[in-house]
Amino acid sequence: MAYASDKLRWESIPEMLSSGLSLKEREDGEEAKVKYVEFPFEKVFPVYAMGFSKPDTDSVANSGHDQIWDAVREEAKLEAEKEPILSSFLYASILAHDCLEQALGFVLANRLRNPTLLATQLMDIFSDVMMHDKGIQRSIRLDVQAFIDRDPACLSYSSALLYLKGYHSLQSYRVAHALWKQGRKVLALALQSRISEVFGVDIHPAAKIGDGILLDHGTGVVIGQTAVVGNRVSLMHGVTLGGTGKEIGDRHPKVGDGALLGACVTILGNINIGEGAMIAAGSLVLKHVPPHSMVAGTPAQVIGSIDEQDPSLTMNHDATKEFFKHVAVNFREGRSNKPLDKENKDGGT
Image (cartoon, rainbow, N blue to C red; front, side, top):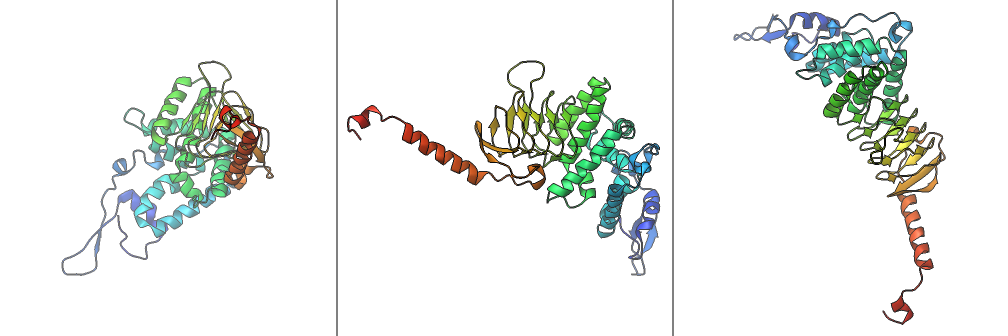
């Protein structure tokens, strides 16, 4: 797609998209003629955005001024002007919709679709859940704000909505969780399977996750069936909240508000991670972690305390100095308390 003139403004994009636009140069070098052809939406987009139903009156977008949705739209308009090649994508994904729930449902449906789980079906599912669940409407906004505030790689609200799979997998889980609570467990598990396949994030739909969550990168995150994650928690890639053995019942970790879980942290069993705790990258946690403490190692040990109320907000999870100091002190103490072996007692080398 190309513009016929530099004077074309964004307001003309919907009209252009409804008919399609191409340019054809004349051989004699005269001004280009504009030729309109039908735009193949069904080939470019599996589901065209205008197929979404109008939002219900109880939607967040219609219950008051939605600053996040306003920001998403303004960012999309600016991006379309800077990158005309993305104008149709941005229009179909954002600007053709009336609220954040519609746009998010469209994006997720097109990411998760496959030949047997159609985008039109997924759009209906996401729309039905998100447009009628005020809890999810609140969560999707607090989560996107968490990405803006804590992830320096997140450039804008619209980029989180369109491109960040950590955000996508988290919101898809929220829909699956709502379906699970409704008793539609087979459909919820089908979504879980598809989310894992597409995003590399495996969250059981029965798990309970709070608001304002950051899944940074998301790749390799595994959260078990009876796990509970509080509000304002940040989880880096590769985090596992798993069980131990083959026991049934309540068997997964409980993570308190404001906790920060570093990359590739593994937490196993029905144990508590206290509020405001920080788990250093690569740690294996097998026992309870006190609130506002820093733990590191395999198995993890408490190596210090946290001054911040919510370390998940500051994202300061460099425990290297404290950890190695702790290891060195313990090593020296262990050597000094260790009895001499037989060779040393006999004067051997």
